[in-house]
Image (tube, rainbow, N blue to C red; front, side):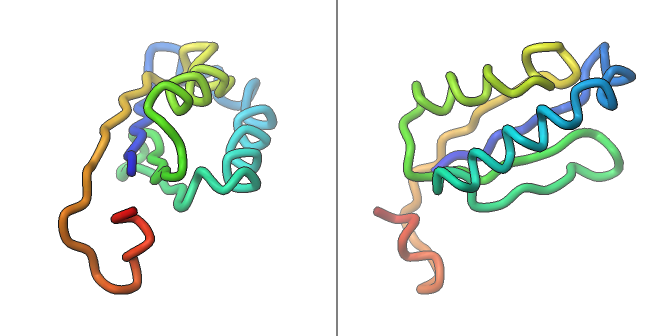
Length: 95
């Protein structure tokens, strides 16, 4: 399981120019079954993605393909979590 932090960077003002591509990137991650949750880091600091069903290397490639990352609108940090204990509703993450 992974948490991807997408924190706004120097070119944050260019976000509107790349929003359509960023949204398509998010939708592709959802359609592929890799992204479980997308949300904003508050207050207005960027976004976060909960991902699973992928490898670290594949996720690195996927994140690099995000137009926001490619155009330095955000900087990306990928954190890998190895679940030890989960609520039964999230047991599929323990895989």
